[in-house]
Image (cartoon, rainbow, N blue to C red):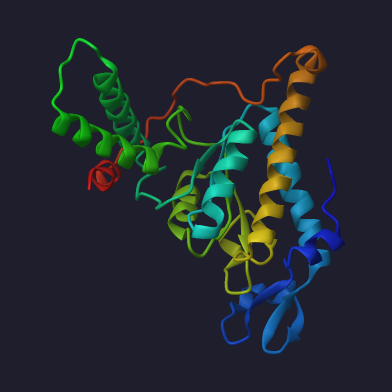
Length: 265
């Protein structure tokens, strides 16, 4: 696995935390000190904890597990989607819908509704008025924005990678309810105890987000290739190397219809 150097962490501004007055005392073990009333994160600990987290992600990928990237803040949205797609995984990069994990059965129904709308638009035997077409296109856009990154996931993920555990706390909470391990970037205002594999670091800088996503996608790709090799597949002989296999839906979670209603708003 490719190492993330202290130099690269420094250059990405990973060490810059929040103002000292905006901190969570549980982050104290990972704080080196402060400068100009800004907490400075201990990058030695960041590097070590990132190494562990990337190893976990690689192992999950090697075993064929699903990994869900979560990054709903503006500066993370595009990169999160790109990273997940590059390594054949899944993502939520806009608003997290309540019940996305804990009510996966309802989310699956919403995905089927999206597919029905798309098929209706493609069906040449159905004559639609311009107004009807526009209405369907708007609905498809809303569904894709909310569920596009998980529509092929086929069930709840094996692991979450969260770019901001404070902003996307609902995702973290749902994962904890279901016993899904979470890798999370924890800035100095975060609670690292809510995630299984915290990575102390700046969660606002675009350069830092780029570093996290690149490291994670590389670790996952490496893990998938390792899994294929151990299964006797000659990865080098593949014209288009496989990065993820489709899996059948295997979730039996139930709950209220909050997710479906939120998409339809």
